[in-house]
Image 1 (cartoon, rainbow, N blue to C red):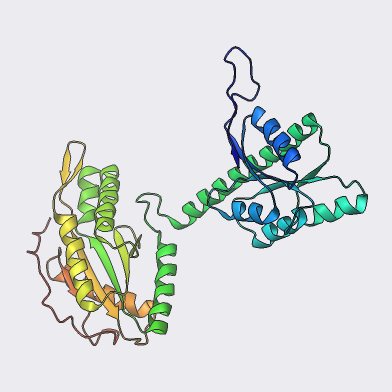
Image 2 (image 1 turned 120 degrees about the horizontal axis):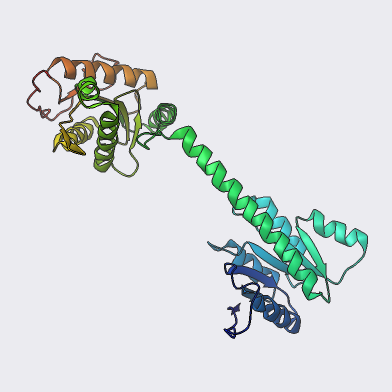
Length: 346
């Protein structure tokens, strides 16, 4: 049963009114005790979910967005409060659930056993309202700290794996992903394509319009590339103006089509940076491994890099595929490769 916040008299000051509404789960097989506890908690601004036994409590705690605060009676039919604590802690899932055990037991060994089961705190029956309030306040402080730690950890993870300029994967992360996908492709005898895309004449953009303009061009090119990819494709910044694209379950013919789509998307229209209009194009080298052929990440990168070199030599703004003798990966794609008109120098 769910109990919402009470309706307050607007003339009556409420010390909890400025606090965000917080859900709390209470599990107690005594209906009178459960009702009294729910009434007290709602008066403090909590939104209460009340259940009558341990099995119901466990189901409630497994749902997405489950309450992070729980008051569990020690003795309940089925799963007891300590049983629930042990189950919760054995899963080690996030976000953390702060648990108060509600018990009539006062013997030291019982309280120690309850805390060792994974409870964060306890309160004895009959509970004193002020004592319960301060213990819950302490629990909320711990949960707030845990939220801050999780957010800080996520920020560090992003810093460690994302390119700060373009927000796509950085070199380390995209190479790590490539290694995993190569292993998977060989194990599952599936296809995997790799492309290296390099901005054409990018030095001239920096020299002519400045590095801030160049940065904006890089960000927009990364965005256009991502817009062409499938949800499970990966793109990362491989070097200064080079991008590495990892395309799981992509045959040579499919990769050629995708490479041309990426090339066309980048070249579709100039990149506007303030009053400046910059024409951006990319040259792309592509390759693939298929049918469980033995290959390493280095094999794929070398083959794609060789194809990229040919694309540059052939006039830029084009896609080139690795030949069958470059890395012994795959034969030439069955479909003809679309070729764009080469750019004029400069």
